[in-house]
Length: 386
Image (tube, rainbow, N blue to C red):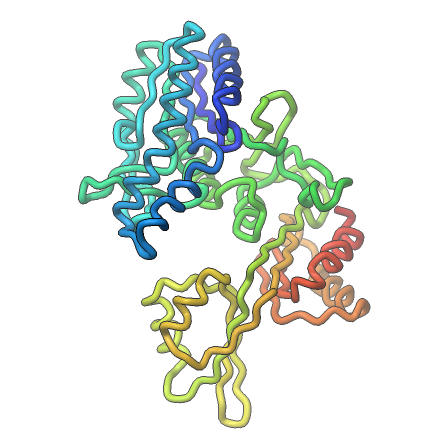
């Protein structure tokens, strides 16, 4: 039996004309498939528009009520897509996250998928229907709608694919994964295949192609992901066990709006500082600690949006804004020595100062002032032939 899960993002269903085009793609695909499940995001900027409406009524709306509100966005696009398919003579049905069996846990707005009971999905597939499922949402233990956060529809799609044991195809407004964002570097190379680990690093380090949680889930359950243009007209990129690229570095990613935070500890330990930050749910990335003249200086990076939360912990933090993180990623770094040395030499010989650096088995990230970000990117592109 040939089955597939397909996911279309907000830009792919932004208008009724685009929804018709997605319906045509699904209709054509149904001719060669037994079963199709299609996960959709909300239309275009609907999520932002709904958040703006809530903001007109309250500066601090209830997270529960926000989830109730935001869940409607995907319901609109799913229903319209099912209507379009029915009009074309295809049997189709739209299911929201609850009807599709999504069980979640965690905070409203940042929930995680616990399980997906696919009974209803399987039932509709047996009736030869194309099943349209709302991404981004599910039901928590209080029987309330909860949402999965930005990129949650990718995770919804992979979760269904994991339960059905099939491939997951994610269609977006880019035609695959590149060595560098092609909008910045026109000669960037499209990658035919990247490993799960590379894709997770890319997503965590700024590439906005796919949600990192979805890749983590795909790796856990051995689900192959295919990322391609929403017209389904050109070959995209596969995410799976191994990369076929021979280059040491397969990708350069960038994150802007990084916040560099400094604090000299007085009457608290490093552990106490980070416990207090954790209680405020502050997202922390790179950490460094230096002891000098009997004082302890702690530095860490977060994001600009977390500044207000950090200020709740203490009033003597020092902040450095207009900072970016530039990262290089590649599976081959596991077996190649000297990559970090090349990066240090490159920065030093070009007079680039950096605030911090972190590494993993397959990545190196540099914290630099945003004003020199593009210079650093161009230097790395030339050095590693990206």
